[in-house]
Image (cartoon, rainbow, N blue to C red; front, side, top):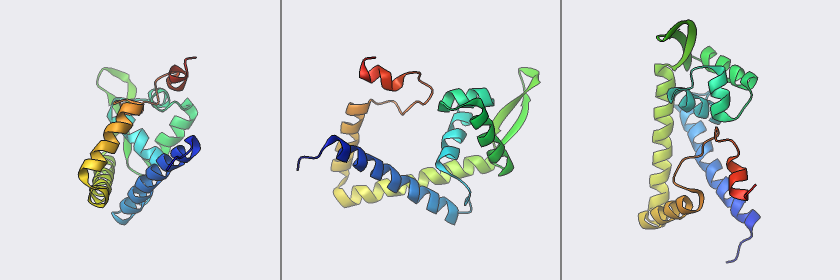
Length: 157
């Protein structure tokens, strides 16, 4: 079968949607009914060192204002807290709470379960080959939203 570029893009997007939708539904069933994909991205960025709205904005390639709104939602829902910065008493530092880490870990378990089901459906060797091929096409590194011009780099501009 010879698919077009747009069909490939839609297949990849559909795979992503299946994973995300399952994670959102599964998290809701496990008591995290207010977690959205952007929250996962933000929690991971904060856990990896984004300590402020400015840091989070840079990490996710969003405005500082959007980052601040996301932080406010995560704080209100108990997933993130702001505490004293041990290096500078004048600053506050974002931290993922135990509830936030619980949501991250449960989400990872849900995605791992989906991956196991796909391995059962098409075979572990074919799934690993698919992952290897995708990694060869897009690179081994996970998507980094903070890499300036990451799309332009591939377009040669």
